[in-house]
Image (cartoon, rainbow, N blue to C red; front, top):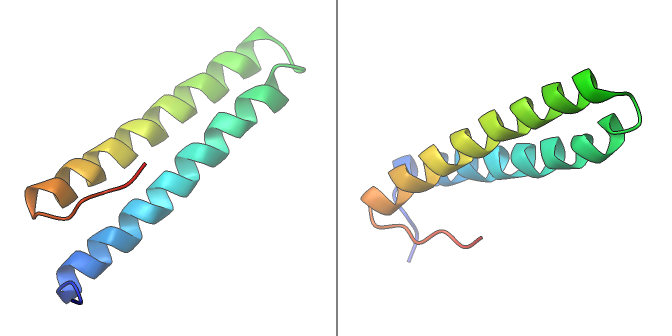
Length: 69
């Protein structure tokens, strides 16, 4: 069964947000070598990316699409 086009767009957006969140979490390790301000900035960016990912996951669940973590 193919999801409707709007669902497919939302799924693609969620997958991009998920990849971005994973990337930002990886940047925290790199930033740890640069000092506390860099760590704080990386953690803040990762938190925003996770929040975006969770918002898209919530939209998908509202339309009945199950999202795997």
